[in-house]
Amino acid sequence: MKIIECVPNFSEGKNEELFNLITNVLSKTQDVKLLNLEPDADYNRVVVTLAGNESGIIEGAVNACKAAAQIIDMTKHKGEHPRLGAIDVVPFVPVKNTTMEDCVKISEVFGERIAKELDVPVYLYEFAARNPKRVSLSSIRKGEYEGLEAKLKDPEWQPDYGESKFNAKLGAIVTGARFFLVAYNVNIKSTDIKISKEIAETLRESGKAKRDINGNVIKENGKTVNVPGRLKNVKGMGVVLEKYNITQVSMNLTNYNITSIHKAFEEVKKEANRLGAEIDGSEIVGLVPLEALIQAGKFYSDGKGTSEVELVDLAIEKLGLSSLNPFDKQQKIIDYMI
Image (cartoon, rainbow, N blue to C red; front, side):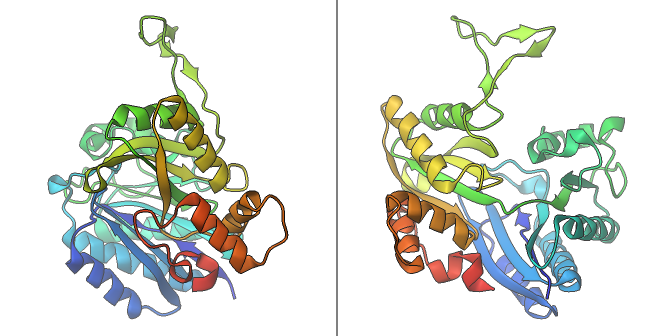
C-alpha cells in the first residue's frame, strides 16, 4: 500500500471548535488517518499531520481545509509565524511505496480542486513548483497576508490555480511536494529577541545581509549582498515565547540527512554561548521520523552500539525535547503512528 503524508498548517492555534471540527471530518474520511494535531497558541497556528493512500490523502486534505475555511478569518488574525492565508501551506510527502513524482501529481490535483471549491488563489512550491521563483516557501510568503492583495496584481505572481483575486477571509494557499520537514525549535534562556534572530540569521542557509563597519547594509548594483549561513537545508528565524519567558530559534530542517537535528542543536548552542546566552532544550513541532532521532542518539552515544529504544531515549534526553512539554515518542514519531 502507498502511504503519503500531508501536513496542513492552519493559521489558528487557539480555537478548540476548529480542532474538533477537523478531527471530526477526518474521522469520517476513508483511507486517511489523523496522526497528529498540534496547536501552538504563541504562533497562533496549528500543524495537522495526516497519512493515507492516494485517494484518501486528497480527500482528507480537502475536507480538513474546508473545515478550516469555515472558521478562520484572516482579517482578524495575528500571530508570530509567517503566513499567507488561513490555510497557509499544504505539503504532500512520500512515506512508503510512493515517490516524489506521485506527490507532485497529488498536490496538483489538490491545488486545482481546492482553488475551485474555496475560490482561493493557490501556489505550487518545492518539487511541484513550475516557476523557479516559487520553489522556496519563504519567497511565495514574502509580504505575507498583508501584502497579498498587491502581490496578486503583479503578473509575475499570478497563481498556479484559481484567479488573481484577493480573498480577504482566506488569503492564499501554498501546496506542493517535499521531503520530510522537521519543524524544530531551540529554546534560548533570554527574552532578548536580538540574540535568537542573530543566531537564526547566522545559521540558516539563506544567511543575512552583509553590513559595513557602521552597520549599514552593503549593496552592489542596487542588490543587497548576502552572507550565506552555515547550515544547508535550514530555514530559521528568532521568535518570542512570552508564555515561557524565553525566545526560540525556530527552524525548518528541510532535509535532516543533510543537516541533522543534533547538528542544528549543537550549532545553536555554540552561537548562543558566543553571544553570552544559554539554551534550555528544544522542541519538535508535529511529527518526526524515527531515523532522525536514531541519528541523534548515535551521535550522543559516541558510536556505542545500543538498542533503538536506548538511542531514541538518549536523543530525547540530550536534545531536551521534553523541556517545554512532555515528548511522547509513541505520539511524536511517525513510524510508531502509522
